[in-house]
Amino acid sequence: MPKRKLLVVEDDAGLQKQLRWSLDAYEVLVAGDREAALTLLRRHQPSIVTMDLGLPPDADGASEGLALLQQMLAIAPDTKVIVLSGNRDRANVLKAIAMGAYDFHQKPLDADLLRLVIERACFLQAVQQENRRMLQIQADSPLAGIISRDPGMLKVCRSIEKVAPSSATVLLLGASGSGKELLARGLHRQSTRHDKRFVAINCAAIPENLLESELFGYEKGAFTGAVRQTPGKIELAQGGTFFLDEIGDMAMSLQAKMLRFLQERVIERVGGRTEIAVDVRIVCATHRNLKVLVDQGQFREDLFYRLSEIVLVIPPLRERIGDSVLLAQHFKHRFCASEARSGLHFSPDALAAIEAYEWPGNVREMENCIKRAVIMSEGTQITALDLGLPESVPLEESIDLREARDAAEYRVMVKALARSGGNIAKAAEMLGVSRPTLYDLMNHHGIK
Image 1 (cartoon, rainbow, N blue to C red):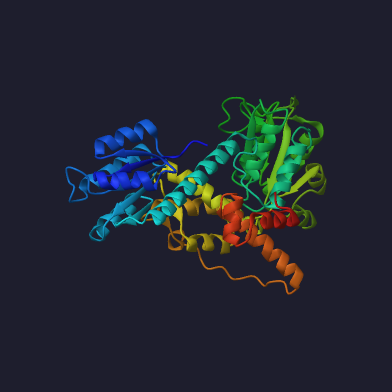
Image 2 (cartoon, one colour):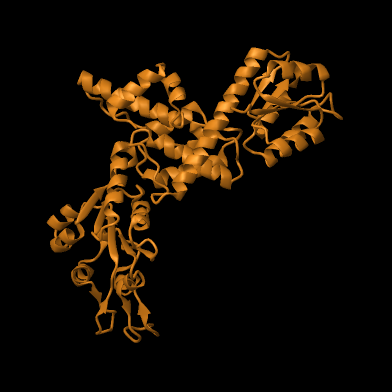
């Protein structure tokens, strides 16, 4: 394996020689001033930089070093910068950390400790690169945006892959914000209709008197304001997929017309008398219990059975063990990029708060929470205070010893894997076990 590149920014020739000798595991590049450092940074793109803040022409101050730090992070925001400083530079070191430096090491240098700091920085950068690679794979996949290690959610994704090539009507059941539309779009992308349109409509967002014309279209003069013939959303989805979100909120009068369309695959525009044949794949979703609505007379039983050819239940985020941290890291990376806040990471108390909170608003609530925290946080850490989450009431635990032990083992393993970005060695270190032991436990619990 080629050596990792390490840039040393130091104007003292003696320290340059000491660092070259003690860091021989790396390809060491040396710069004595700001201009040389920026040239080497652009040419070699080193993973790690160690730098003294006192650089010429301000060797006794920190203005030149801080200016260089700002430029380096602007050019290569993922580079891990380690500041080397003396006791009297504490205020400037804190300022450098606030600007985005990864860490600091105090002079006189302790070679073993400095190597450890650099190794940690290399490991963190490797994890971040792997995260970006996985996010790119995720973005290129048909189920883009679905990030999960939970067995229940993975089962739903496998079911989506199985039913996508068919023409069956699919009903997605899940709480608001749990990812129903993302799954519907993923189903469309994996179907034989992927090159045609995906058209979505929210039945709860459109007034009852307008929903019919939105769905089926209308003829010129059908009502006041209908100045031209207009096709409906179902007709616009010809050959593709039509997604009916929150179908449980559809009025009874419209349910009868929707049933006829599903049976006959023809529509009539409002004010029209001509039947129009439409070939579309129907995918529906709702957060409501349709069986209860049927029993209460608020939803047609025949329509319910027509929609229920394939029913997939999406688990809420609170039931997806380990997914809260995975999603939080995903949203942090996304919003750090869009808000130019590179170098931000979660503090341990923030991760604990994310895991403890039940997320009643599911993924949508988390997305808004992490975006707010990225914007409002100060320094390089997102703390529990930045998240602003209320304290969760602990749930009653099982008193069956074997069941509780298995559940606890599964929970902490999934959390460790989420926090380590899927790195087995790091997860084993967190758990205090060997890698073979962790592999055995993962096989026992069915964790891939």
